[in-house]
Length: 183
Image (cartoon, rainbow, N blue to C red):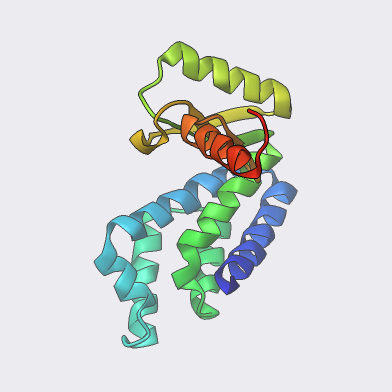
């Protein structure tokens, strides 16, 4: 829970700067690239964030990486601030929350779609279009498969869960029968 509060605080601060100077999208791409690099290169992430190493050496490694990436001065200063405040290990969480904030700013909603079987591109597009109409936002779908659903789909968009899976319908039917309701 503490991680989320820290990520939220720093991501909102960077977004405020991005909105003010009109560079929120640029910062999004730069932060995402750095977070992806750190996630991909575990040794680099350890060299920068592990407190067992001398802070000055860790900072020097971070500076070398930032120079090679040629990031904007704001993102460079932001990452240096994270390091100085001992929050560099939260970079992935901050990036994830910042991505959401920028998407909200641009009117984009992210949703996950889990189906029992592979869906056709036409079915996926129909679901995406329907969700866009219902939310009034452009919807980006993350699609996954779970054979345990038996059939149907489960869609999550924000806090809303639309569960049209056969498994859930069967569980609901069983509960209704237990209570003595007619199905």
